[in-house]
Amino acid sequence: MQIKLDDLTHPKIALLLEEHLADMRATSPPDSVHALDLNNLRSTDITFWSIWSDAELLGCAAIKKLNNIHYEIKSMRTARIHVRKGVANRLLQHIIQFALDKSILRLSLETGSQDFFIPAHQLYLKYGFEYCEPFADYSPDPNSKFMTLQLKTLIK
Image 1 (tube, rainbow, N blue to C red):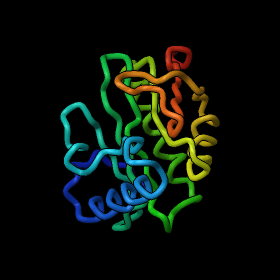
Image 2: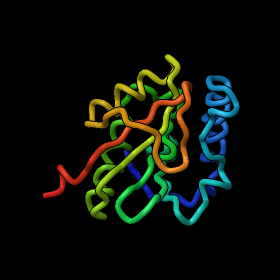
Image 3: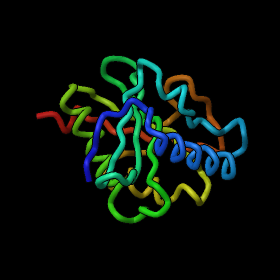
Image 4: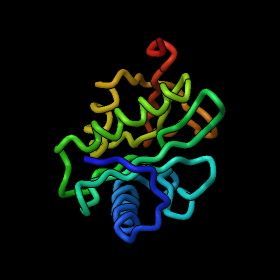
């Protein structure tokens, strides 16, 4: 698996993000879908990575800078045919290492509260994320769960 900083121009990225948005729209009410589309992921405050095996796209991840010490995991997606092969684990490890290297003190995220998102909750809990109150511009929403990881305890 090779993770690379991505400019979101490869057609396979667009297809994966369309799949992601379709699942989010099918799972959550419209006002509770916070996933970004291709154009919004191109924002200057977002860092986007893709993960590949040779020419096959396995997944992607994005983080958004909220301030110098707090970033949001804005998107994580594993291609359907690669689910449960370690792709999400590898992407999350990469994000955490990136944050540590940049002296970021906190990573937070919003995800759905429906059963569809239980594997995501379990993944984040495994890496030390804890449930928290809404952050940034989010409001309480029964269709959302908010999680955060305090990295200052991991910085040596």
